[in-house]
Structure formats: structure tokens, C-alpha cells
Length: 355
Ligand SMILES: NC(=O)C1=CN([C@@H]2O[C@H](COP(=O)(O)OP(=O)(O)OC[C@H]3O[C@@H](n4cnc5c(N)ncnc54)[C@H](O)[C@@H]3O)[C@@H](O)[C@H]2O)C=CC1
Ligand SMILES: NCC(=O)COP(=O)(O)O
Image (cartoon, rainbow, N blue to C red; front, side, top):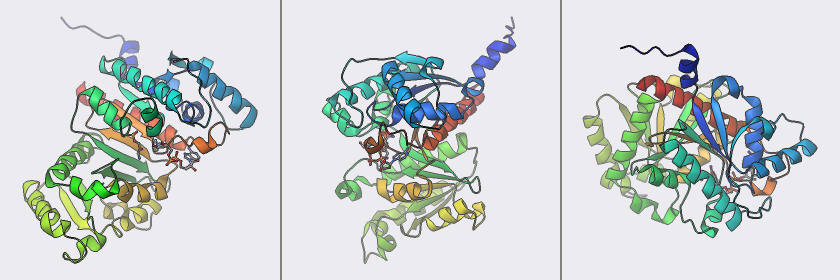
């Protein structure tokens, strides 16, 4: 027997259902959410549920009404999964109360996504220190997502589309929130092979790049200058890359590229002073600031932090809680808007691949 779906049901199924967590309620999360949602025709394109305190959203809305000439939505017009943990939140101060709140929003969003209620999660920014003050010792939201989703293979990818050319910079971090002192020991051929797998899969499935070209950074100045300025490249990075080139003939692997020049071509492709084909499809940075200084330099207002390897979509703005400007009405919502738009694109693409 063939069951025909009514058109309305089919359409409804195609609209990605997103959970949008408020982030730390003492930071700019509520403000950028209200502003970003005013800039996107969300009712047409996707179905969004804000997960967090309605009281905090209303407070942010009332502040914006007094301070701000930008557009922002009224929380009364939103679907809200209201979570009020009844603690006092002080705007601009990330503490145990705000950390407990933002952690609770994440737990609910992840649990509801796991049972199929949402196709993806867009997370507002949280403060890791506030989570710690609340007794939750995670280096970030990515690790919590991975743990609760039950995956051990995952990565932190930053995606930024150039407003000048439309070219998209995609940067995966091989290591993330660890002290700089520990980076060299954490980097191993196994870890890099794992991250490379994730990046290739993501470029193929999420960005339809069948035979990607990937640039991999060196660790030391001048990629070690033949061992004179550091030995990691000679000892294992170059041999590992040579082996990967033989094992993966369908992709192009450039590197190890001296970290200071790695970002020249992406910035030229960003501004359109070279053709975008001359830049790589993906960049693998070996540690947090090696990747994020150039990304934020080029695209602080619009880069999106994307978790790859999870069984559902997760995006987030690239910026943090910005406690210094919370409650002032001056936060820029472009990165949050880009995070929502990318989540819609990725979720739509994945559901088209499944069905
Ligand atoms: N996605 C997330 O959950 C992220 C969370 N964080 C957390 O945020 C907290 C604060 O981190 P910071 O290093 O200070 O970075 P931050 O991104 O919060 O702020 C850095 C600077 O940029 C400004 N800024 C940030 N976002 C802005 C926006 N949308 N519009 C206008 N100005 C903006 C801030 O006012 C500040 O001067 C930390 O606890 C950190 O762990 C940081 C990055 C991402
Ligand atoms: N630097 C990126 C960042 O801090 C966001 O991390 P996460 O909370 O998304 O894991």
C-alpha cells in the first residue's frame, strides 16, 4: 500500500526544526537572538524554538525597546521552551547562577534533539568559567554535545562566507580548548588522521565538494625550517602527510604550510584579489589560536562555529558572551544570524540526503 503525504505535511517536514539555546543569560545571547530573528524570515524557512528563560528574553526585549533602533522580535511572537531555574541573574556577570541556567538550556535542547524533536541546535554563547562555577567542568559546549550525543569523534569547524566574493573559509581546529603548553604533545598522527577524516566527510556531505583540497598548517615557525626551529614537522608531520597522500589519492593535501603564510591565500580569496579556486576548500589548523586569530580577523562579525561528527546539526556564533557590553543594546547579531542560516542549510541538506 502506498501512503500519500498531504502537501502541507511534506512541506512541514522539509522545514528544519531548530532549537535555539539562549546561552548565558547574563551575556549578549538573548539580545543577539532577538535581533537575529528579526532579520530572517523564519516562519517561512524553518521552525525555531528558543530554549531558555522567557523572563530573561522579555527583560532583554524591554531593555532593547528603550535603547536600540535596530529591529528585534517580541518574545511573545516566539515559540519558547521556557526554562526558569529561579536564580538571580545579574546582567554582565557570568556566575554560578548564569552558568547553571545556560547548562540547563543545553541539556534540554540536546535531550529533545536526541528524541527527534529538533533537527539541529543553534547555541547562544556560554561562559566556560560560569559553567565551572556552577559545578560543570567542561571546556565548552562542543564537549558537552559530544558526550550527551554519545560520540567520541567530533570536531570544531569555523565556517565564514565572504560578503565580498561569496567564497567560504572553512577552518577545522585539530586541538581546541587546551593550554598552549600542551598542544605539541596532544598532536599525533592518529589525532590528525581523525580530524582529516571528519573534515573530508564534512566537505563532501555538507558542502558537496567531492574531491576537496585541504591545507594543513605546520606547528613551528617556518614549519620547523628543516628541524632547526622545531622537530615535529620532520619527525612525524611530513611523513604522516606523505602517507596520507598515498592513502587518499582522491583529495589534495597541501602542507605542512608555514603557519604565518597559511592564511595569505584565504584572505586574498576573501577580498577577491585572487580567484577563489586558488585557495583551499578546507584548512586544518593545529591549535585554537592558530586557526581563530585569522578567522576572527577576517570574519569576527559573521563566522560560525559548527560542530562536526555529531548525529545532528549544531552551530553557534563565533563570539562569546561579551559581558562587557551585555544589556547595552549594541551587540552585533550578524554572527548569530549566520549561525541560524547555516544550521537551516545543513539540516535541509542532510534531510534531503536521508529522504
Ligand atoms: N560560542 C561560545 O559559547 C563562545 C563562548 N566564549 C566565552 O565567552 C566568554 C567571553 O570571552 P571573550 O574572550 O571575552 O570573547 P567575546 O567574544 O565574548 O568578546 C570579545 C570582544 O568582542 C566584543 N564582542 C563580542 N561579541 C560581540 C558582538 N556580537 N557584537 C559586538 N561586540 C562583540 C566584546 O564586547 C569584547 O570586547 C568566555 O567565557 C568564553 O569562554 C567565547 C567564544 C565563543
Ligand atoms: N573558541 C570557541 C569557543 O569557545 C566555543 O566553544 P564551544 O562552547 O562551542 O565548545
